[in-house]
Amino acid sequence: GSVKLVTSEFHLPRSRYLFEATFAALAASEGRPSPLLEGHPAPTPPPAKEDKAINAMTVAERLEQERVFISEKIVPRFLPTHIPGFPVAPLSDVRLQQALAEVEALLSACRAKR
Image 1 (spheres, rainbow, N blue to C red):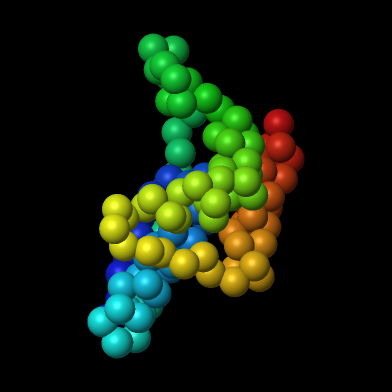
Image 2: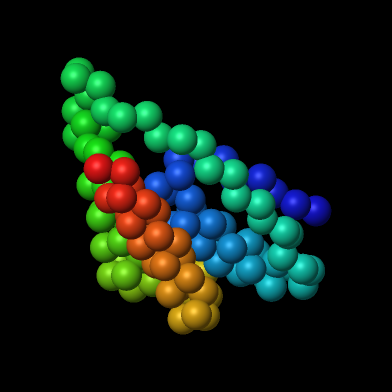
């Protein structure tokens, strides 16, 4: 089977990594293959004047946060607590670097539009 993940463009690299790691752990625990994951980015609108907190951030600011989350927090902090009582192992370093490269590419494209 397959799973379609629809989320904001800036959030897709992290979301895809987390889904792949979680589905790999679930599939391994049940002795079956992991489902195919398709990522479908949705455009992120610019912040409105009344937006607050993260919604008031530009896409570039959000991407900067994603870069920090992927490079510093996803493996040591988030995966161990993602599903309480169910260990989710990190994917390969190559896959983590791929997610980070996806964020860097989005950030470069965002900066080029300025």
